[in-house]
Figure 1 (cartoon, rainbow, N blue to C red):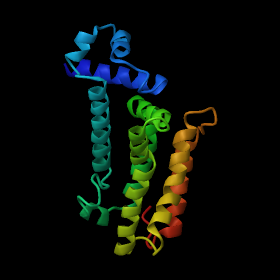
Figure 2 (tube, rainbow, N blue to C red):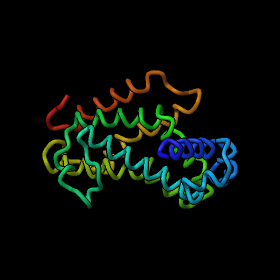
Figure 3 (tube, rainbow, N blue to C red):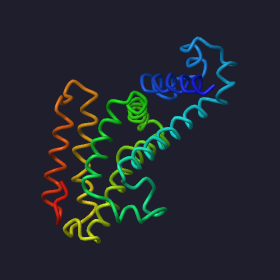
Length: 207
């Protein structure tokens, strides 16, 4: 059952990324899988049910990865304490993992492409895109940097400005990976960017 649900979700997401969410019907997903609509409905109630399961899976993967790298896994409002204990080296390794996550993993790469495709046509997809890939990560970094400043790890500065400066190369390199202008040394360049950022802003260098 779980394998079939996962296969349906992966196939649907691949079609969403290629054709757009609105253009893909349950019939099209079922046809791609070689099953009937009735068989698909035994696993998901609707196309929206499939989409909701995809989003839930992304949040689960993101939480697991944050925990693995010992960085905050929940919002600052819900659990502020981990933000006060984040180490710069952990944040660096998590950021590099995020790059791999959004570019190399088929599931997450297709979600990113679908949201980018739909963001100008669907207000909900626009909100999802910004919360997952643009504004959400900037707010997350802003909260971390603000708490690092309070803890004396980073020099006093505007935490939002620092968050934008830190995140911008990651955002650019992720989207460059989709085109011919992709950089084969992107992860190395991102690592060097983070090292310079830490060197310029840390009170104590943790490398």
